[in-house]
Length: 178
Image 1 (cartoon, helix red, strand yellow):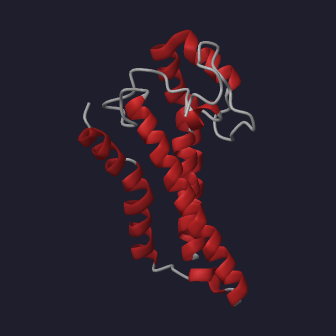
Image 2 (cartoon, rainbow, N blue to C red):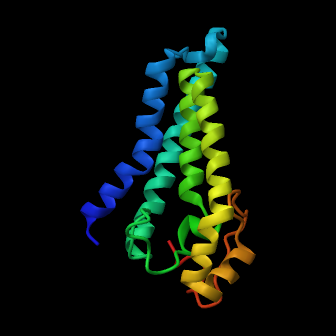
């Protein structure tokens, strides 16, 4: 596994879902109304919230992808999955922070660009990933990581983050997992 393989995985997976698909939707629908056609104060507010969501979501994706590479010794891609279960950083608060970050980016794009079609893509993305993880990915992780994943799954929610980060029993003291 190399930094190039990590970059390739990020460009192919989140890149296609967050850039290529939304761009295709916008080109096909010609549905861009920055501010949703609302009065300027509301339009600016929604655009600002959308822009902040995009920046925050991308930061979360970057942080979690880096943890897949450094801690998990793999990538987010199914062809080169992590060899170790990642339970550090944002993964101490929710089991799928990378997809949470991607969902935040898609919501932000919809708000910023005022597109009902992008809002639909956001809803489809969230629902599709929810069912995929429930029906497939969690079974794969349970087989790959066994009891460690079962313990992690009991303590860390799937999507919405815990207020207080969970500390695995064999983990270093709080504050050292960054």
